[in-house]
Amino acid sequence: MSLANMLDPLRQPLFTVLGTPVSWTEVLGFGSGALCVWLVARQHTANWPIGIANNLFFILLFTQAGLYADAGLQAVFITLAAFGWWTWTHGGGPGSTVLPVRRTSRTEWIWLIAAGVAGTALLTLLLDRATDSTVPFWDALTTALSLMATYGQCRKRLESWWLWIAADVVHIPLYAHKDLYLTSLLYAGFLVLCVAGLRNWSRAPGAGAAGSARPAPAEAAA
Image (tube, rainbow, N blue to C red):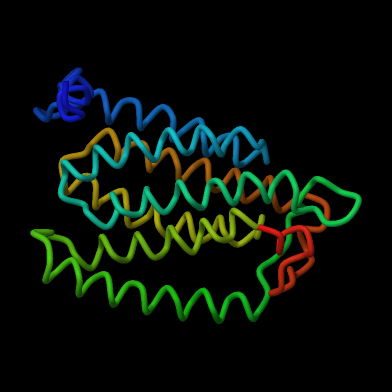
């Protein structure tokens, strides 16, 4: 039995929303994604394995929808999740296994913004010329914002929540445009959870301190 045949049941419609069939893949992506963000907001390390499962479901979903940058982004997320999982449990520095919440430093912001602008431009060009994407710029923009946010999440930077919020504001109408209504609803839920996560992390000890652009010794070992 081929991989395509094994995955075919996940692509089958489970129910219909506004005349559009919703697949098992979208439903499972909805559930695992919501649980993941809820766990991140509470700084629970279980968010990482749940997030990896969510990424696998979304690879299937976004490939079907022609959102190729978002599909490829999920593969990157899996790699970053492994790094984030290790950092959250080992990145607290000597004598500590807990990574504290910190603010993003000025140097980090410079690199993040430069990488985000360059990444959006290059991905837009690639998607426009090499794929049949009908939304190359918006697909590229959400990909860049999500990668920037994931970097911050891996290192527990408070402002990562603002980047997630910005990405969600674009994702919600983008997925509705692609008839992924349940996923659009999921990202509306993500938006609410991100606001809650921002509030929770803002109250964490050390949240007012700026993080160093250089990783701590324990993080550098990654």
